[in-house]
Length: 429
Ligand code: AMP
Image (cartoon, rainbow, N blue to C red):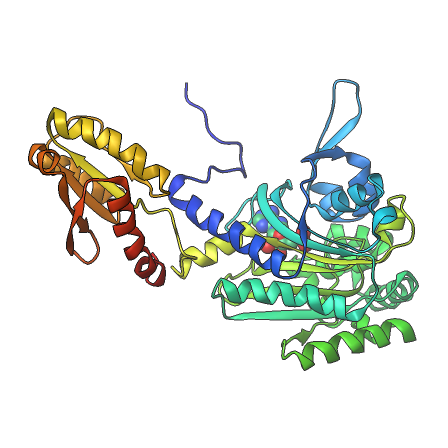
């Protein structure tokens, strides 16, 4: 009997892991530049956190959660997103009492019971940032800028920013009525989900992807035309600041995002190369969420980005974020003396930070060279009887085919590799 992964979940195999670690490093680096600190909430939370935080009428809560009882019958859920958890932590640990303004980021797996397809899975991975404690429109712009900076650092072009404002709770109440009026004559011909959404929360109709509903959605009035004076002013400041920084955007009045906690600014960064699942990241303000989860009234803004899609784009464009996974050195060891010397030398070289591997199977030169090739080792050093006797060997650069005479000491070999490393980083593959 053999076993398979659960539907919608997959192994990330060693060949792909390089993209993930580079991406994680890049997220951490950009977060550092803007002073966001990492937080690692647990993967399992009480279900109520999400039903209250994200909203009962959303697809995420209504249909997509992995929910199960624990041994005492309490309802637990694998987190479908992390903003609710970050806000819970902010309230639970009294972060607001120590310093109400907090800039946090996270990286980790999320779980949604969705129909798996390219770019959409049941276990997926997100990175995200949350800036809690200020209503300043420049913070909205900082959050958007972090997203652009990260995409730039990954060399991703062909992206566009969709921007909208859905206003405060009061504005949304009014907008819901505007939407009901718009959909009332059309709802009978729309999907069953939308008929339910029409009663529960017509805003959610705007997220519907069913072809039967698209014409009615496309003619719906936009939310940014129905804002109170404060929200309209916030939105125009956000737009002005984006323009000042030459961060381009496209207003999409029907962008509402699938989670109920959003207020005012909402945005999505989409890739032109991804087809249907084109959203690389999405976010916005959530000025009522801290209070809704039991904290003092505190505004917040953030975004979450999908890593699986980013890796997909990066792989497809073969624009590898410098994959540092190539082996630095493979030592081909021949004969007992060669094997013994290689085993000792490898340990000393690794201590100098150079990655080294050996064959360990006592195979002939040709097989060991082929193995070094399959590992994409950057350099190879042959260690046989004569090299051991003379204390010197030839370090071969497998890309340029150059050879260099090196002393068989950890220092001699690691400094020869360090000299080459500058060049590898420039032409990284
Ligand atoms: P959301 O939390 O729904 O705002 O999604 C934020 C980002 O996470 C999206 O733009 C996607 O890049 C990614 N994402 C959401 N759901 C999935 C999924 N099921 N599979 C892969 N990526 C996802």
